Image 1 (tube, rainbow over the protein chains, first blue to last red):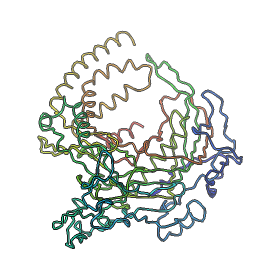
Image 2 (cartoon, helix red, strand yellow; image 1 turned 90 degrees about the vertical axis):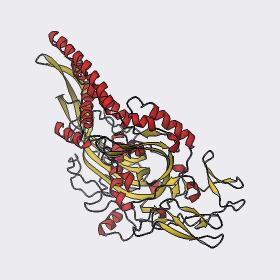
Image 3 (cartoon, rainbow over the protein chains, first blue to last red; image 1 turned 90 degrees about the horizontal axis):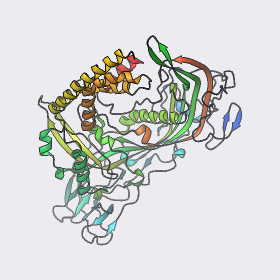
Image 4 (cartoon, rainbow over the protein chains, first blue to last red; image 1 turned 120 degrees about the horizontal axis):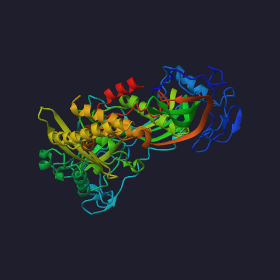
Length: 492
Length: 115
């Protein structure tokens, strides 16, 4: 993951510029603050004086620069500690204590429990198993026994996460890998073709057993974990009808005629879920308002502000849990001028602590979309989102600066990261709009099948909306001109 | 960019101006009225299409801060500032969002120009 290098750092007072960065303090240890040991800062971490109070940290006072502050990777060095052969710069980071060397097995295998072929009910041995949405468990359709998979178990203490770790379902897709896999039926011995593009399951046409694909072939069809559907179709239909019902007046008449929620689809979409252990160091300048008043400028009045300016720095460890990224090329394109994929993004998040180990039987009765991108392709996006989260957290630790902060140096170092692929459930209503100018647009209304969150795009009847907006505009203009004349005459 | 996006941008900036923290806000009422149709169009378009919606990962992703080391060094007092916020403030910047909403590129240009 890349590191956003400083364009120009403010010269910290009392701290030699260019001094070698000492290692960050050990986790949980008190921080050193200008040579003194101080207790860890309070939650809000607002160390500055109240409004109007004289500055308590005049220039010249020894800087409060953090002891382990500039824990940043040298330019050009990947901020992550990739598994495999670390280069020289990476070794330097390990030596300095900024990065801990990767430890343990980088790949966490998730597909060794279940074999390809028939997955049998633990009670009766039937292979006719599917999800019971009302209980969230797998149910044998023959003996009605309900059981569940274990939780995915790819988690842990993020503060102890160093280097790169990933679930085996995150391994690179071999682009020459076929979507079609042939399984040998363990019931009758015949060969059954499974088209993973449609589903990782197929029924043996001879003995009628259901065969499942659980081993992770390199085509992205088998993830590490799955979040089963919790909201039944009827409930999702109601949610969508309610959402669209509130948007009927300006909806396109053809859409209104054709709108029907009977054909909504339950889809498992692929995501990459990432835990990140990072170190962030932000430097810049902030302002705190001390006074606000009005002054007369000519005939009118204007607002003026007095403020105290500070050199601001926030250095901290950051533990990000379950950053979620789309893992299909199609859904990564969220250009809202040409598609409505953004509404699917808007129904995040999911309760990702409750994901299960993948079992193809969760997919029965639903469709699924295969993962189509590799971790490498998402690394830049993940890096940018980690920086955004770090920036937001830095701001949360510096809300004292009510006029804002201009960060001039933003360094985020990824010390450890854990990637896994997860199927997440969505109820999807889709409507294909062919516009009069020939443009095509696919509108979605998406329901998070765990939380019930909904977002959607409804085609608009633009002539109607323009006409009513025009009437409002006309009335508004008349009133606006009248009011402006009154204000001018009144010498306001 | 079609008429919808242009109207959307106009409305967005009008609403920003109208909601700006100023004591002579009364003078802005005629402007808001004069653009009421545009504002209405943009509001309805946004409500139906939700083109600007996205998951606010920067705020809503679970994140824990530990071992915070703050630095706050007083620099100077500034008087008679005309801007309501620090010029060039970038603490709320978002770079990794896949969806930037309608007319985002033009908005960015306008924002850079007005900075």
